[in-house]
Image (tube, rainbow, N blue to C red; front, side, top):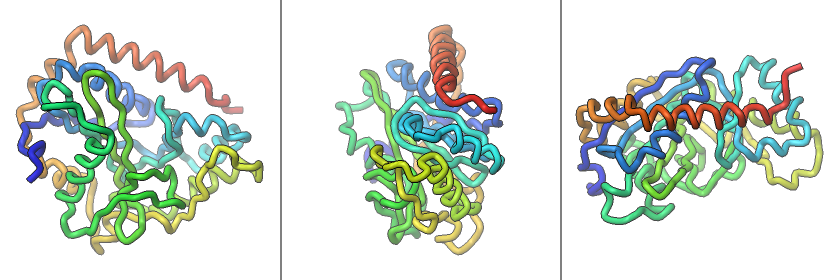
Length: 274
């Protein structure tokens, strides 16, 4: 067993409603900034409702206003995260899971690939009946070298952020629901945003069938709660009291306020609804 799995781990869950969507990244950034005082590694779960999370690169779409109008007409909320990458869907069938590793609890800082591999190890341990691999699924949305896939179909994506005190590895995992429809939504988003303009920014050519759900692969329904329990079960969870106390400290509250201001300001870059 990987040595890091034997460490005590705290847990933090955030089921978010649309008015609080940006809290997902507000808390992610504030926790990362607090890495030097995190008492343990942290497992952070969060969920959203019918939301498209945009990446910074999506601002370069030549017809972004039209693309956002399409999302509204398809009854999806949206916001832009303060990191690279491209658009992904998050809804009641998608589980977002982040792992925070403070450097003060490690023998040495993890490389980028080592940090990614830790998340892969966790997913493989949580779903041992699936032949989970990584590698870019070119025609998925938000393709990347650490796409989580089974038999060539993508079931999730991984990204990370790091600072001098630690790293957070972030995963979205398609658990259930209509993944084909999610793919069609992002395909249509880019079609509307590009309108045949030469794609010099390498926006993805999304093929909806390039992605699937864990429930479809297992051949039976699986809930978000069951998926959370599987991921939790990989770790030795500890009492969350020390982490809860940290979130009430003045410094952490300041970080939350700082990040809320920064991410709220970022939303102002998006075209206004007309």
